[in-house]
Image (tube, rainbow, N blue to C red; front, side):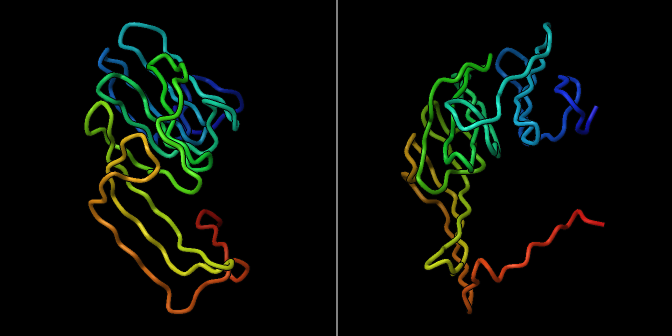
Length: 173
């Protein structure tokens, strides 16, 4: 079933933010709302992994995941500024890359050591938002891309100040 319930049932999925089939035939889902990875093996019991928190291997704001050719799962977390590596049973294998500002939010494997990813970023100076940037790059376990395939910059005519920004709740009645 879909939706959020009290507790953490393997059969209740809040959101599907990433999905793939592992080499062993398991369906693997990223449920970013619950901050869990849910694994549905072909011939075994379903299980999940992931814990909320800032520690090694914990998830704060997972955005996407991908399966590398060697069956490592990469999960991009934009609040931790890390792309973390797990095996298919959920064991944390370390960080694929970490940054002091931004990591690619959407990754696709290119080979066993590289991913192509999309980075969306704000250009900020003195608490003013000057514009937005996004680019597609090749990442080889480093926070800066080894290749930038595309970059788009959008500058505001008048910089926005954080305190002047209105927060809009598009889900409100």
